[in-house]
Length: 182
Image 1 (cartoon, rainbow, N blue to C red):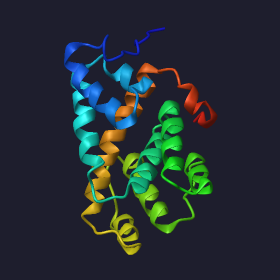
Image 2 (tube, rainbow, N blue to C red; image 1 turned 90 degrees about the vertical axis):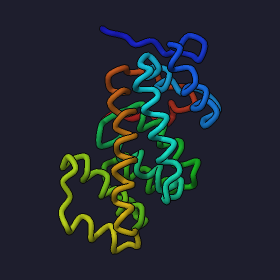
Image 3 (cartoon, rainbow, N blue to C red; image 1 turned 60 degrees about the horizontal axis):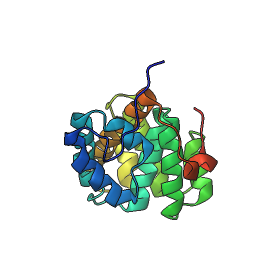
């Protein structure tokens, strides 16, 4: 079986060190998936730039976590589902809404449901949204321009989801209680 080492800041390729330091500042540690991604400086730098923009969007941090968790489930990335479950709960999402997303159902919270539905539809339909998809998103109070920011979040999470599915990093002990199998 092909294995990808989980890099630390010290062991990472030179061009991955700065982005790893930036992610360490954001999370307080270097997540194993990020350490695996660090084997590719191109992917590491792309990830940091895109996530920086995503977390500077007009969505709340809780809404971003809804999108990231939905995307991880849609892409069946076990590591990312566990990680984003922990972050979603930390952001104060109702555990029942988090569980619904993990079970590929819509959360009870209408805004979160609209975000989750739009994100999963984007992934499942490969970017092809109907007028009804966009209308449902707008009807809960989102501006139509925010659908384009959902695209940015989906792009960022696709990097982590696909890289996680390829590299299969070990799940940190802190996230074990949120382990998930698609």
